[in-house]
Image (cartoon, rainbow, N blue to C red; front, side, top):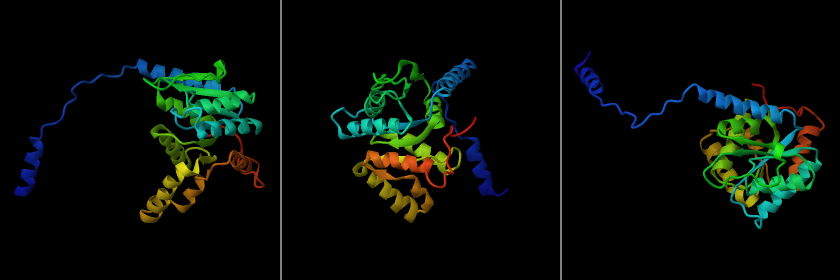
Length: 245
């Protein structure tokens, strides 16, 4: 070993390792909480008819144009024969559940315990509300049972759900289903950045991945995309849960 290598090793030997200022070990009972939440979700959602998932900002007010747009889209999805799944809270979630409820359709809420801005909206059938402690369990329920994802303007949580679904489709971890971005003025800049930077500049995605990202403002076009996906002339896509565990 050379002198330089010896000095290198000695440097590592005398390195001071960082330590936790506080550590709380999870006990085995935590897993039972997770399992119970999964079981509750599966038993509830397995009994329901196929749904679409609609998500967006919890901060969207009823007077906002996207609130009304979410309500209209949800009502049209009900007329198309689907139920509606949301995160169960205010804003876009409330708007979508409202559209489903007023149309006399299946209105499902997957709520999450948060320190702010999350509560059950009044447009969910009480027997169709799931209360989640863990975000990852909630996402399992969202993804497994939704036959399409309709994404309205939102914040970090909306982007998280959008890109997680796109990643799962891209990597064939779930069935390919429609993912529709609603709000051209809101989403067009993001899609253009994806084209310019992720695709053309860095080649970090494939050109075919752009097919996963239609953008529209038209509720009828949203429903048309979903209808053509499942009832098109090729009929290669079937309505079924997106994966099996």
